[in-house]
Length: 537
Ligand code: FEO
Ligand code: CA
Ligand code: CA
Ligand code: CA
Image 1 (tube, protein in one colour):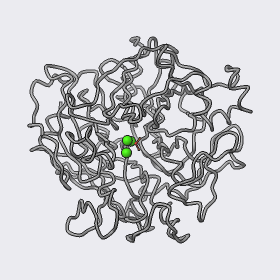
Image 2 (tube, protein in one colour):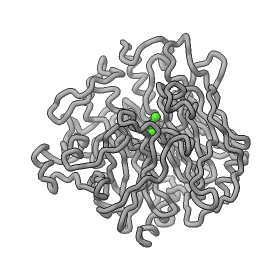
Image 3 (cartoon, protein in one colour):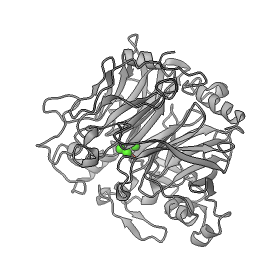
Image 4 (cartoon, helix red, strand yellow):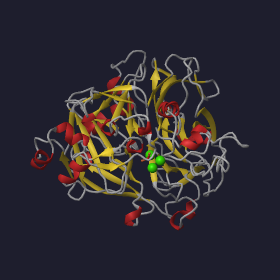
């Protein structure tokens, strides 16, 4: 990584390079997760925990959690509700203040039985109003949050900035032509992870998009019928989903960025290149799919640019531009078709298949791009790994080297890495995502018990050691770790507790309310002496 590139990168993280950019009431836009100096951790400020199987959010002594929002909470005076299965979180300062923020939270998917509080299968018959209610529970929430004197963040319930972007919102498709006959898509869903642009808008990624509408290939042949079957009442084109959606923090104005391609986007991680263009890394979370990067055409916009896919064997980024690739010209009628059927196009140009790329972060120590590869069970990879991509010249360069950064398994204490995030002191936090059908059930996963949250120091004597700090409730995973704009507070989603409940009469989880209550995915803030010591200066 050249000095110039690294300087641009640090400026993006600190916001130093963009203080002049203001969007409405948002002041300086970016999280101050600068790691230009990082703390050399000599001793852990906690005693790590062992894996646990319980229906509680368990954590090490000194690490407490505060629930900020639960599924179905009313968030504004219009009666809109906090959606189901919260995932990615990200926040920007409000009016430049460090104790007030606009927080975005994804709502990924739902299971109809718990959602409607009656035994109904994924594909089961629901009324039109029930399907509309499901659509409105997915997408994302914008929340105005404020830190109290005791350091806890809460949603300002009456704020005009609290709003939903959901499965019924009309969202323009930013594309060279109409897609399946439309320039506006109805709704966003399957929103897994995401990103934050250098100008302070949120990126939310449509990952499990094929759950709801029929997926076709470029020839129009059906590849998959939607298991959750919203098509019993709505016939929206499947090609309208699987995109990265950009959402303005203050207004909720959204658009689908088709130039970044259509696939199961886990995340969209932005970094500024030396010339001020934005580079966005994104993985396609499916066995044998690929890692992509997008280079914006202009500063301050992701509407146009060039998409590349990784040839990891040869360390090269391959252009997905139809005018540069004769094989794409032969197979597709135009660039919009290439982008809409990215999975087909990437195979024609020789992309390297991966073991389910999930989250992507930029290592503040050296600028490396770290990609979690969660697992590939059909190939015998049960525990996953973290891949390191080192760009040769700059983020917009065409050559890189790749190697294992860390592998999952008993030695490193985690299996199936999913979301990862660096804190302001340059340490890595990792969430595991063993699926509910594997966790505590199948041999390779038994030692890990419930999904966990892990702390991994990357400098000093403890560099590279893995320590579990929290354990999720039954069937749940931690997702969407993020830090407040000053880097001093930590947010996290607790997603899908009790997901594997076969019947409403035999709920597997009652987290967080206990008793016989329905389990509710919730947004939490971790706080306490462990957070103060790890995130403090
Ligand atoms: Fe929604 Fe790839 O995890
Ligand atoms: Ca996952
Ligand atoms: Ca994920
Ligand atoms: Ca997941």
